[in-house]
Image (cartoon, rainbow, N blue to C red):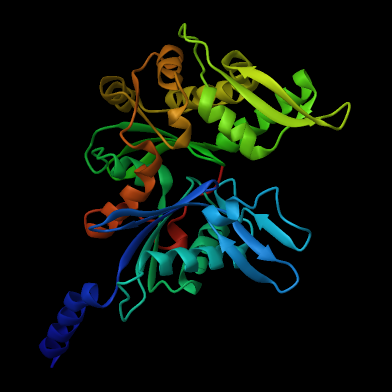
Length: 360
């Protein structure tokens, strides 16, 4: 009888993949990415949700909602439910995940809900990890696994995370920067700081307000950072025209911003990231530091695309730093690889709340 039920259980496990989809989610402050095994990253949408305050209904999610930022009437609010990498508005996050899960399964609906791997910043609290797990389950997931984002990114860029070799990764996202040293399927040293892309946008807004007496929006600041952001001068001069509201006259005004303006604006945030990386290296065991010196440091996330950042980090840390291929999708790809090889990567998952590390 025992053998009979054992065979039934094995058969059910065998056919489960045919009854449900698996999904990897990079739940980011700026963008949320969804990975479907066999298809790759199928969704890359801004983590923005527009809500009608009169009815309480979600009006738009993702790119459509982001277009509404700063342009909504009084009864519509376009909001970011993920702040500094963690859920700040549970219900809206749940709606956003449900929308993304459904969209990723369009034309391929299965009988059972999907198994989902969700990336969270390193050092999250039990409450923050439980919120991510519960939001995914309420959005229709059958089973949810939690993985720390630097670990997922390392797997996504094919680093040997399970080997007795030290690897270092710097993940500069929208809300947080995760710096981690990884070996033998675990994070040896890590630091998470709330200095990342959004903070740099705020730096640019404040700089332009103080230097040019013009008020600009978050989207404009982000576009300036993308277009002309550069942390090291290289002989090529970049500039961009910026439109905003004159703080003196209250009328619209346009000014020309140069790359040196942006460099000066974000200098403090870049220094904070460099200092945090230095702190992590200072507390890392010497054998692992030797491995990192040999293999170099890997840069992922949207912040990795800032011109010259890899060269500046190399200068400051005295260790080669390289931008990973397709750095924006590293965490989502890692979540997908984990789903495809759950047995192999079982040790990297924070599946039980007891396993969650304390937050710094």
